[in-house]
Image 1 (tube, rainbow, N blue to C red):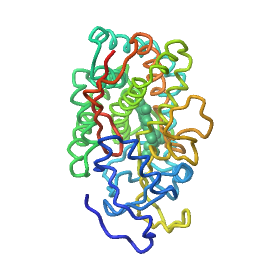
Image 2: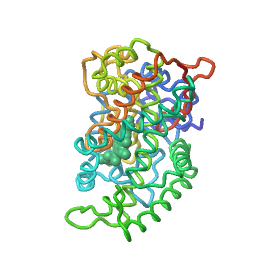
Image 3: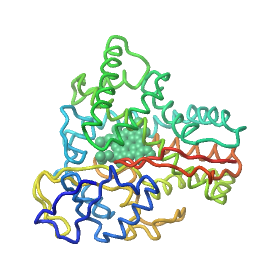
Image 4: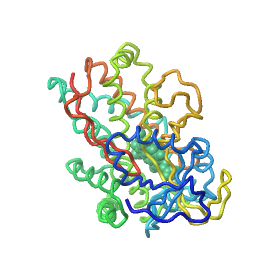
Length: 397
Ligand code: HEM
């Protein structure tokens, strides 16, 4: 791990060489590693000497303050070290007040009413996937269900060619786990080229899909530009092809280790929404970055203009000052809302869809698959990066 020196404004005891992209322990057990880091820095903030230096936020309160203060903590650059690409990822890399005009029309496409209409198609798809594996009594759950469920559903929604789903998934995984911007760039270019082609086709002939709806959007009472459509598609591609895959995988891994919780969901499927949210808190996995717009005093520390901040959602959701016994899964938990979907202006737009997919999956899987458990001969494997992903999950029943 390449590390640099400690700048004079950083207290020595808060400096530590942590590289979220390359940390080898993330590949063994990401949330165990997160818990170790939290314990090491009870202040909820430390300074990593890797990647040119950046602040790491692990405390829940510090996380919320930063996520809700985009004037000081801008999302114009999310990657560390900062890299301002020529193209925006809309709406994530747009700060308020501009941000709202892009977010509002997208919210309608992913709002609760819209997602409610998707319920039956999600249930049907889940049952088709279960039909394919139920008699095998074992599977790599990532390949069998965690990937196809959200990816097929999202690609159908967007109007992307389903026969290319494995190829697109590999672009998303590669781009999100690359250690540097130079390695990531080829994948970003592939995604851009894909959408350039599809957007051109839909501009000539609209279809009944999300890309056509985005092309028809009005931004501030004017038609959206092609660049803006491209920027939105870029964000949706990575959100749609990666996030829910991991949420499902962490949830099923936990359930595979808890016959009681499986049985509880089987008998009381109405508890599934609460299971979804406690699972998201316990195994929060999408982290993000922000850049300081000016020098700023924060928790008695001097943060400098241009410095990067790594917002570690996975750690904030396990902060013992916010959540009692944070490593335990507790359906009766009291306390603040988790930040697995972030908080503040950039709170996840796809959360309704993600929650719906997770809820139905837990219900249907537990109903139809009796007593599933981990295959102890093939333990889960993980991918390190901004997103703490799972690569393989072998289960038996
Ligand atoms: C369990 C699954 C998911 C998790 C944990 C998750 C997490 C997040 C997080 C943490 C952010 C904030 C990023 C930042 O502030 O830098 C975010 C933003 C966003 N997510 Fe998700 N996401 C999930 C699923 C989805 C899905 C399925 C979609 C759509 C297909 C989606 C679309 C978006 C969009 C468009 C934003 C940007 C919102 C804005 O900037 O206003 N997400 N998500």
